[in-house]
Amino acid sequence: MKVLWREMLRIRRFEEMVASQYAEQEMRCPVHLSVGQEAIAVGVCSQLEPEDLVYSNHRAHAHYLAKGGDMTALIAEFYGLENGCVGGWGGSMHLMDLKAGFAGSTPIVGGTVPIATGAAWAQKLKQSSACTVSFLGDGCFEEGGVAESLNFAALHQLPILYVLENNLYSVYTPLEKRQPPRELYKVAEAMGLKSLKGFGNDLEEVLPLVEQALKWIRSGEGPVFLELSTYRWPEHCGPNDDDHLGYRPEGELQRWQARCPIQLAQVNLGIDEIERSQIEAEVKQEIEKCWQQALEGGIPKAENMETNVYA
Amino acid sequence: MLYREALNLAYHEAMTADESVVTLGEDVGFYGGSYRVTEKLYEQFGAHRVIDTPISEQSIVGNAVGMAIGGLRPVAEIMTANFALLAFDQIINHMAKLPYMSNGKVQLPIVVRFPQGVSKQLAAQHSESYEQMLAAVPGLIVLTASTPQAAYHGLKKAIELDDPVIFIEHELLYNKKGEVDTQARFDPFKAQIVKPGNNITLVSYLKMVDDVMTAVPEIEQQLGVSCEVIDLNSLNPIDTDTLKTSLSKTGRLVMVEEDHKTGGYGAQIVSWASEHCFYELDAPPLRIAGLDTPIPYNRTLELASIPTPDSIAQQIIQWGKQNGL
Image (tube, rainbow over all chains, first blue to last red; front, top):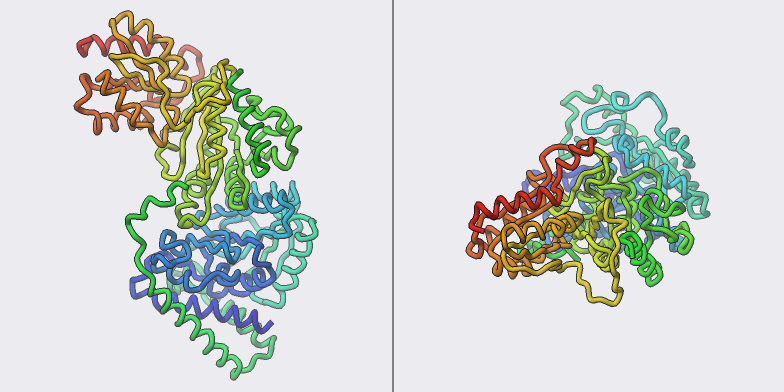
């Protein structure tokens, strides 16, 4: 459990480093930070095998890191360097680390959900023991391709876990202005999926839900839909806080910050300040080292511009 | 053999040779496909490789992308070109770009097949042609087939390729008869000289090739010329070598296409010719294309909206007379 807490802290400090370095104008890709949502990424990915696949979306850093993606390659990708995880061709919104089973993220909302579903079909056809996880958000749940995917996965009992991170907002519009009053996971349930719901900021609550979901999936009992409530602390896209814009009620962010996934777990696990500061130092050292290594990468070569357009 | 049977044969051979080949689409399984292209595949290869999908075009292509990343070689059938519009996000944003955006970490050996074009009064939302949009997308290969021979070899090649291929058929070609020589060396990337000639190069593809061939005797008689008819077959990449050789010989270019004229596919061919064959040309190129209107339902109007053998002949004869023939 402490390993998982450490992983959440590692992701938090990583994202904070992205935010602090962003102002230098060297990373220019849009960054969708995962601060506040770490327990979901870690709670899900920590229970996956390396060969299990994760598909993600625009807010992908936490999923990538929690699945074991290479941190140095992630940083280098933000800087558009050739040692980036996709060689500087993608940036923050187009990540991939197949060695770690991070099969891809794209920022077309809902774009990877049918792809993940197809990947689960391939796993089932090949009688693989692996499964697929598709991370989506409450806004993504409004996309047509998601309904298509849930229908198809339920129909064919595909080995896939849909994890809906419900952070209550699209970019600026709250859920209640976008969807009628209802439980999102009940919609998936009505579509024929085993569906679960929990508080996504509490690692201890997330873990058994994921464990149950994966048990069903790995025993061939079909796809599972898991809705986890959470809250994004920073602005939708970028390194800053945008609470002053007033699209979120005053005090709401502070109430969610009081339920910080890292603080909650620290208390639950009884990690004292001495231990914390030791882990903080290790994490800081790792991030700084990776940052330094990442920046040693070269600029991708223009003569390779057309490579990989076709096989 | 019929065109649709040639496609079916290509499927059978590809699926027998490689068990990673799967096909998915609406009614492709038990029913054998709306145009009978996937007939008997379901019985032979089973429901896990011949997948009857829900009415979910976006997911058909999206699933194919995931399957391809997972090591399969999917062939997706979209019932008709207009339905493919629902899948354009997956086709353009994902299928075409993921190999590039991933710096070559994934290859997507996917074929997306669909018929297009004016058939028999299917009206505006079942009759359109989209090769011009798809040929403009980097990362996609766009093949067409105007004969059973091209259909068989083209689809087989498309399935073998590691790139995503848009394979375009025509609604009115499925029952076209023709020889299929499975042993022939047919390169679908090479434009076919359907009929050699010396004075005018007539470039076309899909069903318009047949209409051009029907028009040719009248043109040749009226203008006293011989026409060279070229079937492009591959729309991206373009076999410019064959075009250049022909234009060097004839000095005259006519492009015939069924899609809408503004921004239509033939604009690319004429643009290429004016850039690269300007000094070979003895006359301004002529483009014969569909009107810039949706396809109307009424049969008279429908036929008036696209080139026909008569209108092709008339326009070329008039153009020829104006340009010294």
